[in-house]
Length: 173
Ligand code: NI
Image (cartoon, rainbow, N blue to C red; front, side):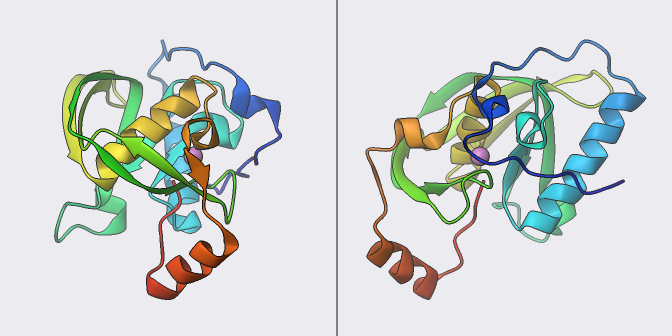
């Protein structure tokens, strides 16, 4: 396992559509293991393969609503994820590991159900609420080459950022 470099906004790899995973092989497992290490090291709550320069439909999302789990145990691996249903609405600050220190106000569904495959190619469905639902949407957007800034109604000002950092440590996705 190893840390991978997280590319930042301006790199064209973040603007491309990712291809489906067809082989659930050792190469995929190495990518997932490296992404897990990279996400845990970053302090973020989600990571998409294009953020480490790989144009495949692979994302990690931390289910921060699960009480009593370690950070490592909160990680959900999603291969070829698709949103199958969503409901409700939340509006709040959203950031990205590929655009450090910047946050925008983004409206997302409050509850999101995703279908995906695990690392061995088994299909499953998972439902997330709140930050986890936001993170599902944010990471799946990365697979379409879409960043949160495109969806933000506005970016937070320096004053708002200072206030936010003062109140709590906000997570980057
Ligand atoms: Ni992101």
